[in-house]
Image (cartoon, rainbow, N blue to C red):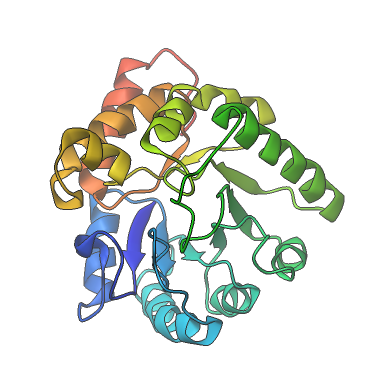
Amino acid sequence: MGILNATPDSFFEGSRIVNQKAVDVAGKMLEDGADMLDIGGQSTRPGAILVSAGEEADRVLPVIESLVSAFPKATISVDTFYSHVARLAVSKGASVVNDISAGEDDEAMLSFIADSKVTYVAMHKQGNPQNMQKNPFYQNVTEDVFGYFEKKQTLFQSLGIKNWIIDPGFGFGKTVAHNFELLRNLGEFKKLGNPLLVGISRKSMIWKTLQTSAAGALNGTTALHMAALIHGADILRVHDVKEAKECVTLYKTMYATQPDRF
């Protein structure tokens, strides 16, 4: 899943498509091996300022329309927690909704997902981008996040939502130690039977550990992508498609005798 941010303030400058030709950036990602393009109109980095549904829609809808026109066979995801934006994006050709709140920030989201039958990415977070990194606490981060998705599974089944993906929410209300514990225990989430998405690309768990920056975190990202694949990740949400695709190819070659999960 290649990341395209129609925002001026996402944490990694290289993913921003403001003042760039979105079609050119997306085309390069598809050429490099992206299976899905994730379009976001709101930064959810720690401390980010909330953008309204209307402004978010104004940012993402023209991009989605352009990409659907240029690449009609591409799978387009919209990164939003607003049901209004999700509805409009799907009407323009998006087929995946990537929601950092798993339906908790907009009570109308889950009914839309149930009615539309689009693929839904449900992510765990503690707090919101404005406060989520202020002393996040868990009794046991793996058990707590797993329990969260167990409850979501029951809820989604009751609503008729079947086609959904788990995202443990690396960096969303978690310390660096929490993030690494989740990564080590990633395989636990496979017990729920849903595809597993991992979004760790260039995040602070990497650059803080390596004492670098988001711009200098590509090598560390690739290393942890391999760890994520080994521990059960089915989808990597990435800024750098070529390097991630190479990582997947090496993983598949290394485990060629195992059933192919991709």
